[in-house]
Amino acid sequence: MEQYDKKTNEDQLSIVDGMIDWVRVVDKNNIVLYANKKMKEDLGDIVGKRCYDIFGTNKKCDYCISCITLEKGCIMKKQSMVGNNTYMVVSSPMRDESGEIIGAVEVFRDITTEINLSQKINEKNEKMSEDINFARNMQMRMLPPKGMYNGVNIDYLYESSELLSGDFFDVFKIDENNTGIYICDVVGHGVTASLLTIFVRQSLRTIAKGCTSINSIMKELHKMFLALNLDYDRYFSVFFGIYNKTTRDFHYVNAGHNSEPILLSNNGNITMLKSKGYPIANIFDNVQYDVSELKLYVGDRLFFYTDGITEAANEEGIQYGVDNIINIIKKEGSVLKNIKSSLDDYCKVHKDDYAILMAEII
Image (cartoon, rainbow, N blue to C red; front, side, top):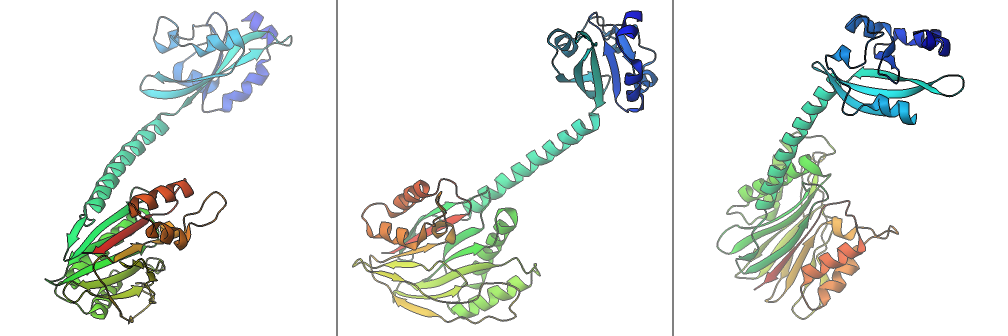
C-alpha cells in the first residue's frame, strides 16, 4: 500500500465515499487497493484482499474487464451477478503523474431493479404482441371472402401501416336480391381504430338485415355510434351502397369519405361516384344523406378505395393521386396486382393504411 500511497492521492478517491455505488481500485495483481465507504459497509474491510475473494470465488472472472483495462488502458463495461443482485460494472484506468497505469477503478452500480422491471416489461410486451397478432388475425378473418355475392364478384387489396388497420370494407347479403357494400376509414391507426372497424362491421350487418332504406341504415349507425360516447376526435367516414341484382340498381351515400369510388363501365368509360355527406361523428346530433342512384350493367366494375392510396407520397412528397389509379384501371391485365406494384414502386414506405375493393357486375 505504501507504493500506492505515493503514486496516488487518496483525497481524490475520498470524493466517492458519498456515492451509493460500490467503488474500488485494484492493481495488476488483483489486489484491492481502495474501497469506498458504501462498499466497506456492505462487504467489510476488503482492502488488501484479492478482488475475487470478496465475492466467494477462488479465481478471477473468466471475463475480467479490469485485466483488460490494466493492459490496454481502455474503459470496459459488463454485467455481473453478486449474490442475488445484478450489477453494471465499469472499469476505468488509473494513472500516475507519468501516465503509467497503476490500477483500475471499478464502479459497481446495482441494476437489479431495472433488470427486473425490464423483464416484466418484456413479458408484458410479449403478451401484448400476442394479443395484437390475435386481433390482426381476427380483423383479417372478418374481411369478406373473395368471390361471388348476389351477382357481384369481389376482389381487393388490404394493407395496414401497423399490425392493425383503421381501413375496412365489407360485402354482405341483405336479402335475396340486395347486397350491401361499403368501405370505411377510421381516423388514426392501431388498436383503437381497428376496434371501431369491428363496430362498423357488426353494426351495419345488424342494422341492414332485411332493410334497404339507406338513410334509415345510416341514421341508426350514427345513433349507435353516439351511444359509445367516445371523444370528439374519434370518428370515421364510410361510403355505403346497396346493389340489387334483379334491377341492377346501385343506391349509395357518402358519409364523409373523401375518396370517390370509380366506375369503369363495360364500354371503357370512367365515372366518379360523386356524393357528399358528413362523417359519422359525435359532433352531429342528427344526420341526413342524399341518396344517389346508378344503373349498372354486366361487366361494369366499381372500385372503392381509401386515401391511404391517393395520399401515398414519393420521396419528393408528391402524392400518388387518383389519376394513377384511373390509368391502371384503364389498362388490360390484373388491375389490383398492377395497382399494388405501381404503388409499392411509387411509395417505398407506407405511412397510412390503405384498401381497395373491386366489385364487378356478373
